[in-house]
Length: 611
Image 1 (cartoon, rainbow, N blue to C red):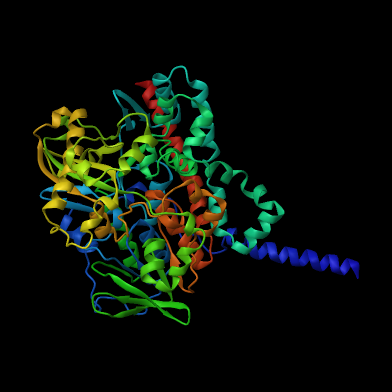
Image 2 (tube, one colour; image 1 turned 90 degrees about the horizontal axis):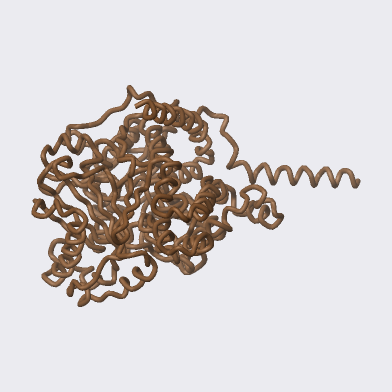
């Protein structure tokens, strides 16, 4: 009898572990990605009218496909990645977006004759670009940025962020020759978090099984000490490495890439950004809209559509199950058994499915907050990049090395303070998109573009949130222009050759972010990337599943902000929906892809030595 009981216990434990670990197991079905695409398949749509016919298809009930399998709300990269993956698996997908062009923060737009990117300024040379190539069947081309892809400007000091680990360290040592020990410690910390396996596993495994693993200590054996380091603030990690405040400021420069100051931001997010650009940066040829164009083609190949000016009023729920969406324009109800929201937690729970709103008053949401908003300046310039001396680089311009103090003081700024002009941005991002894209240079000979981004408080502009766009009155325009003037004057300090070269200047504010992204407080990165967001409790809770059967989430809120985070959020969502670990399909080809990229880098380095 004892032997039978022990045997029965072993069987039960085996079944529990099999069921619990099943989401991590490989599918026996064929890989949804055929193979690493051949360079011969690369394609750029240079006909703008032909591209717009794909990107700007408008919603009507008549042009909506019948017998839908999936409806995706939002055409940002998270929504489009989910839609493309499910389309590759034979599902008919409808993507609906409130804007007049598809792409979310990946769309480009024209002001006068100039084309600007709305949110994608650079992408790491490694995995994200190769993932897009797989999703688009190899149609997307990439253009490398300068070897020094980022330039950190603190006072009169400029430090180049270089495109390979060895050069990156050498550049840091040039600026801080006595800090090699601290720099090595920092690089070791980054290396510890190169593998995000811990974050991935706690989002894939069932929560009940995670509870068993954690209570028995087995989870730590599976993921190591990932969360212990990832959930520390960036500042606390920098403090443990060095007392040199200037070095700390340089190492922490990219905090604005995800919008959370070092004193509050998770080191896990910081490390993710730095590691993403480990081998440099590149830009999508044809602009960021080109990626969306190719992804739409994938959706259409399975009978789906991507439709714009298609605002969703609500998710239709019957018997605690999402069964469709009701459209704002014509009150039509579109039905599908799977509804995916790329609108973020706050929009989805508070607006689209208000029956979920009470969950926002519980953990983990009570420990979280909305991310930063921003002001932007889009400038069209007279002169080619070569004539104006512009490179394919991004510039991060800081007031001084006091990132935390300056940002907190800046957040207190009033409208009167802003109008006085007697202030500086704590950080300002500056880039020249046309120099990153050979197609853009071809379209606009003899001209250049400049994009500038800086943090801004939504509350400073909130008084005009109910006014119509482009008609918010003279006081609003005065405040907007105060920020625009400050951005352009700061730019001219660093690029005096641009004085008098501006042919067109267009500014946007947090209200613009709210209008175009439909974000409640103009947040551009969704949930803020505080240390709490990278805790085990929060990471394991922010996942594609919702309390409503048939309703799923995708995009940056379920993983991390930025292009790469939202893109991989699409993979997590598709995996959860289908019950298949699509990440393993990706990883199988990624191993081949990494080997191919490593071989290419060695060949490139050998060629440089021979020169």
